[in-house]
Image (spheres, rainbow, N blue to C red):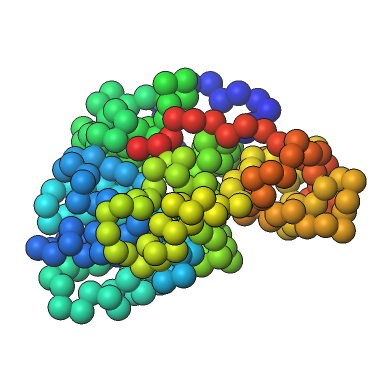
Length: 287
């Protein structure tokens, strides 16, 4: 996170990297339950959860916040993936299901470093202009994410701090070059309660469940802080630079998230010659 604290205030600012996709129709719930890795049917209306779409080999294509508006309407707050390509790929599995998948280009995604007046935990609220508010914070770190048509400030520093707090709480922000590379366990998505191993079939479910029940997860997310701006690339041990331990998957200033062995140790490590040390992942963003 930023070395300089961001003072609390109520201004909403644009947070880049997020887009909105709507799923609507009589079969929206059944379709989402069959395709996505979370237990959509168990989610009450007016609530949200972390979820994602996997390849048949159990690799994450896209991570998103899934909002159940009612029995026929779902909203996906898509993180970092290209929305039109995602919607087109997902549409290939609709077949005879009565569901439409539409990118909502009219909705803006913004955030504020304050607790929502009404949204709490997984419960979604409506703001005064009819937009949606989601609680993206913790008891110690209030954050409100807003989805709606209302314009927001453009502030790069605030947006960078938002991203840094995402990473600090173990929310991986993956570029398109990382799509289809990592399993939910390798991204430690159990910390966000983003996938189910008991709800039944979905793409990649067999691999996810087998890894879970056989205890075969060998890698997970490690939060790292570098001595300078965090570069992308492989993570190595400082005393064994020829031995690759992991790979940086998300960057925010001097911090980053890397997929590394669970027994990688306390470091120090290096990425592209820059020294970095592990930091604990913060809790509180699970929904």
